[in-house]
Image 1 (cartoon, rainbow over the protein chains, first blue to last red):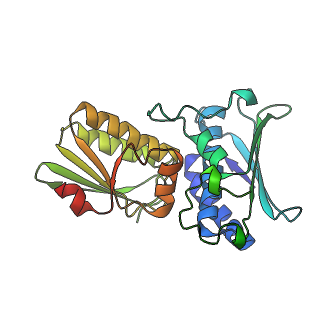
Image 2 (cartoon, rainbow over the protein chains, first blue to last red):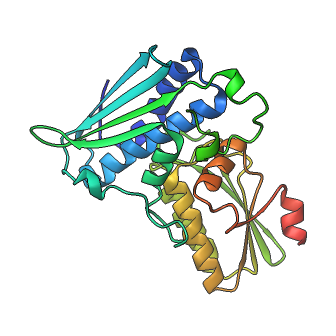
Image 3 (cartoon, rainbow over the protein chains, first blue to last red):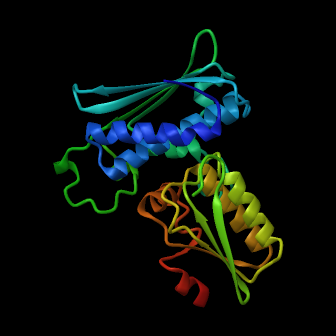
Length: 152
Length: 115
């Protein structure tokens, strides 16, 4: 799907993704985490890639992959400002201040979060999240999304 | 019912405390509305600010940043800030950001107002 770089379009994208995720077998918490990751990714494109301009174009592709593990793959592409992928890192969380949490959240709730420059311009992000089997978390009542209980 | 960038935010004054209840999802489109409202309330330097999130089913990092900003402003004004009623999905975001121990989080407004 293609959307414009408008913050008011984030909610309908979340709704679409939530439906796709639930029908693919993710539970409520995993679905919430996937929607959060995509939301943060799109917010970054809007704010940093397009400097909050509302007319930038963003493409979102969603795939359900069965092998070797059942997982959802989401690719987000834009034509905005390019950034060195190596510079897109989580910040020190001990420094309590507003902002800068998006990348940390994205990396924490997905199994794959890879940025790359897109040719001829813009950025491309690949997010992947594996659907956890029931035996992986039979008694997991606190899905905080930490690395320990993330999907592997 | 709120839609688009609009957001319903209920505000109730109780003695020296202010109870703020945002209703709906808080994302990049709506967090500026919440930020503006909280800033306005804190400018009056209440002794206590209680933010009831029981009617917020979703919050992204812009919403969290808004509350971190409010926390900093409240500390500067010697105001106690409480978050109450976090739904699981919202609490999860605070835990991943390791902010669940930075904020004073309680389960209901009564305990936050009476603490």
